[in-house]
Amino acid sequence: DQQVKQNSPSLSVQEGRISILNCDYTNSMFDYFLWYKKYPAEGPTFLISISSIKDKNEDGRFTVFLNKSAKHLSLHIVPSQPGDSAVYFCAARLSDNFNKFYFGSGTKLNVKP
Amino acid sequence: KAGVTQTPRYLIKTRGQQVTLSCSPISGHRSVSWYQQTPGQGLQFLFEYFSETQRNKGNFPGRFSGRQFSNSRSEMNVSTLELGDSALYLCASSRGQGSSTDTQYFGPGTRLTVL
Image (cartoon, rainbow over all chains, first blue to last red; front, side, top):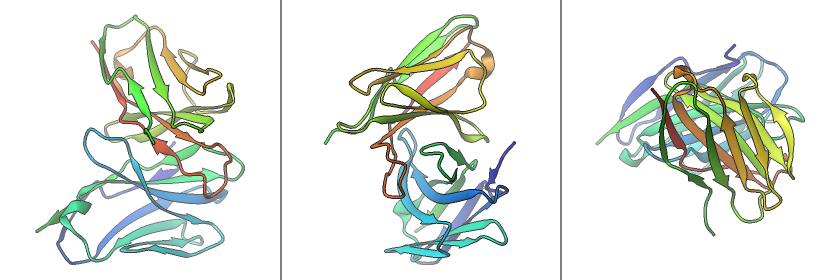
């Protein structure tokens, strides 16, 4: 069963605009969420994370929002750049489960120049 | 500092065979996790090893096994290969503290094709 879902397999955005990637989860016991970026032929690279005690975390152009009541996570990239074109995965962890993460199926972001 | 390395990068096997994949973590990292990535399924957690002990396990059949050595290097073994085992196998290493600052770093993966 897919406890973390990314319902949009792809997203296309113009350079300079905002990219919004969405992620939904079903288990209210998740306490830690992350976003990873993956380029072809490379492993995923950590992007940004958020603890369940927060509802927002920013790092430069990247902001992650957490809506616990809706069990929804989103990643905002502003402004989007062509180099941001990649597959983005969200992931979630149950409390006290160390590195056992549940991943979504990924959203392929294409930022057009 | 060298990143996570995985060998081999590509592998072709036939049904019924077994395969062993290797992962060398970043120096100082004691946790190694393994994931299977298939199209449309994202990454699915296989297991995590910490200090030579399996600390977490996903929902995969017993044909999938692993181990970790004293130098933190890890191997994953799949026996009696099936066509559905064709996937990208990724390993990730971290210090293993489980805290929010303990970032996992992924290797480039091993692409396994089962014919």
